[in-house]
Length: 126
Image: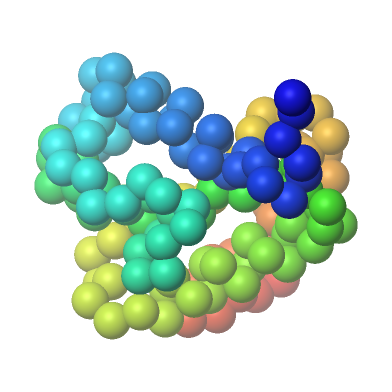
């Protein structure tokens, strides 16, 4: 039986696949040394937080448009990033957005994201 849309977790499926790829990656800046969090349900951490082999702290938010409120995906991405960048002890972190590579998602959301410059505490249209 197919789970209902409300009970599925497309973000968690995306996270799990990404973590598997990171563990096999040869780049020490990306390959996982220690995992802090890999759950899309965490209230304390980003969807993915880990320390790479090179010691880089990664903070990554995962988002899909596979939900009942897909039209709000871009707004949710910005909300999550603002929340994460506002946390203390994040001076040496690198931030990322994990989205699936579907043509629809990339064409709908990536183009608007490309025209933004990410600053320390602000987003500015170029």
